[in-house]
Every structure is written in structure tokens, then in C-alpha cells.
Image (cartoon, rainbow, N blue to C red; front, side, top):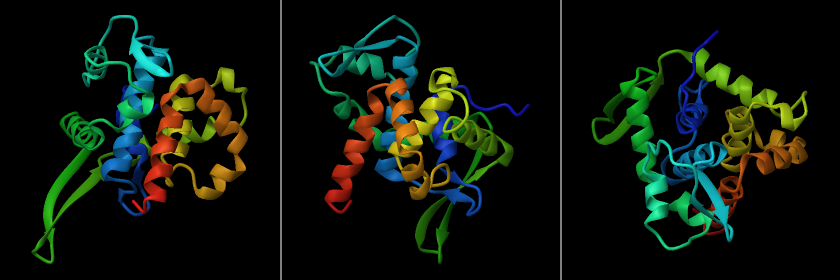
Amino acid sequence: MVEVPESLPARMYLLAYDLRKQKMAKGGTRLGYVLRAAALTELYLDGRLGEERRGPVPGTPGDDPYGVVAQIAASRPRPWRHWVRKDARALVGTVRDELMRDGWIKVRDRRVLGLFPHRQITVRDPRVVKTLYGGASSALRGRPVAHVHSYDAAAAALAAAGELTPVLTGRDRRRYKRRIEELSARTGPAVPAVRALNASAAAAGG
């Protein structure tokens, strides 16, 4: 059995890696939305976050690896969309550095044509990504949604919301639209916030 990272943000980072092209399929703020939503979703599924008035609130005390609960506790009530967007780009670097430190990926900084900085990401064991792909893919078919592992359901829902094409092509998102909606409903309120932010970015030409 292939071991995979425990945290949902780490899993989503690896799911954004295109094995065929050997590079990240998503980057910058859009990947940050997915990772922030993954952090919020993990806390929500574990009961460390609850929901009031369509926004997150601190729930059962527990680990807060990215300081998200502390941010929410210190703030006035805000919608999920705000917390998905907040510090999104910074979280990409944080999760990348954690994966590098723990030996899941290699990171090499180089210059294209000797001028333009480029960060090359390499997954050390492609089987890890394939296993995560398999979990997210299996969530779309077969067993009833209620019986799907919560992180596989979340991975599929977040991948669809963030348009992570290595996991779900546009055709897949259309084909499994109803199933994705069911998985999203089970996963929690951060998923529709990702969709809304991406729709706004697309409308603005971002």
C-alpha cells in the first residue's frame, strides 16, 4: 500500500501535479484557493470549525496547523469566501515547503534562458500522486456518496471546484456534475466558495 500525506492541503497540492507533463498544472492564487479551502474543509470535517450565518466559527479545540482557526477567532464574522481568499498565495509556498521538508517532492530553482526565474517541482514517487488520483476518481463512481471516504470526497469536490485538470477534465466535470454536487454538499461550505472565486477571476479575465 502506498503511503500518502495525511493533510488535505498536502494531498490537494499533489493532485495539482500533472504527471504526464512533470509539472504543476495550477499555480499562484488559484491553487491557493484550493489549498485554503482544503485547510478549511479539513477543520470543518474534524469539527474544529463550525458554521454560523454562512461563515465559519471556531468549533472543537484541536490542532490548527496553518493558524486558520486563530484567524477566524480573532476576526469579526466573515463569509467562507473571505477565508478561502485570505493568504491564498502564501499557503501555496507553505504547503510546498512542508512537502519538500517531508520528502514528498523535490524543488529546484533555476533560470530559463539564464534570465527568467523558474521553480521546478518534481514528485519523488509518482505512485503517491496516482494513489491520490485513484481515490478522487473512485469517489465519482460506485458506492453511495455517504460511504465514500471523507477525504476522497473532499479531494474530488475541491478538484472540480478548482478545475484541477489532472484529476478531472472539463468533460469529466460535466459528465459527473450531479455526483460532484453531492460530494460537494457532503464536503462542506468551502467548496462553493472556491467555485465563486474562480468564476469571479474568470469574469475579470484572471
